[in-house]
Length: 400
Image 1: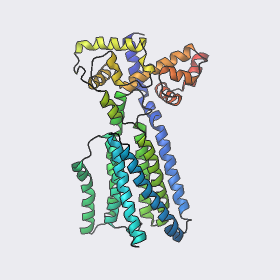
Image 2 (image 1 turned 180 degrees about the vertical axis):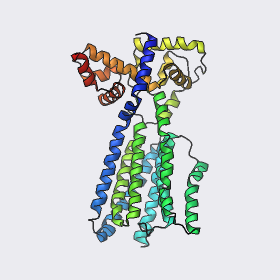
Image 3 (image 1 turned 135 degrees about the horizontal axis):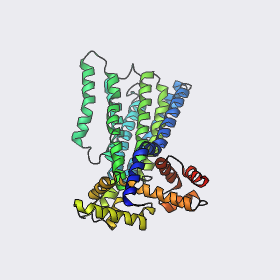
Image 4 (image 1 turned 30 degrees about the vertical axis):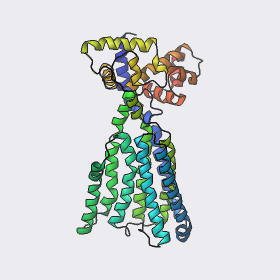
């Protein structure tokens, strides 16, 4: 196919199916959020059948003890195995702070017999709500470091926390009840953080041809868990039913356990990309673009480097003497898409060729020979780009 017509075809595919591909990229996270929310709602409904005395004397101490243990244990694991990865340290600090707060709660409630605070809209003061919101803010340290590495420092932390402190002071000096605003303030920070997800995804697409093991989807899942935790907490505050903390404490324990496992074994894509950077040529003459484009397309068609599931932007250095920034700009300017979309268009075309020429080939083999890291990822990308599953596409082609 002529290079120009192929370029137009890729632009058409990207522009026509970007919404569909975005849905196929995140639909598992949407379902995860809905299932998690449904479980929390059901658990809250069932918690009313737990006798209050039994819960406060037996279940609650066990829950807080388990939370304290997993917080300190997880923090130690993340610090010991941080390997210079800042995002692991960020979540380690979150767990450490939560563990200290849980230890204080246990000491006050079960040693001194002086409850720290009583849940319920009528009982909680603005200061108690602020203390709880500080823990919620700590949960946002990890995604902040992922989405905006190095941004969080003392000055920015103070800027984020000042409005909440101001609300607490105002609630104390003005006649209006501002507790609901204090309780909901972390949602403002959550919304701001959520606005950076798309930019982070674009960055990942500019540097990696496969996002299956990159944490774009994971960070959306993490934020969805934080949102469900916040919704459950707000419901507890307004319901005046302390027994419903059974659901919240159980949810926090499961979220921490899940996050420790995920973060501990998850690479930092920014660090990997930084390690691959070097002092390559940092400028491109406009007259060289056509030659570079022709050279790149010839290499992609003849050598098919995209068949390597670990294919990355810096691998283009094999034929183009540019650094990471200019490689990314070159792909954007010449093909009007990200590196991720550029490579996956070749992979989808290769898969279509294999299915067209080998109607009996198994989809797992098509996936592997096209460069996709797994059959599941192959189906998701292929469906997002073409609007049909590989089976549907193959059946349509061979029945024509």
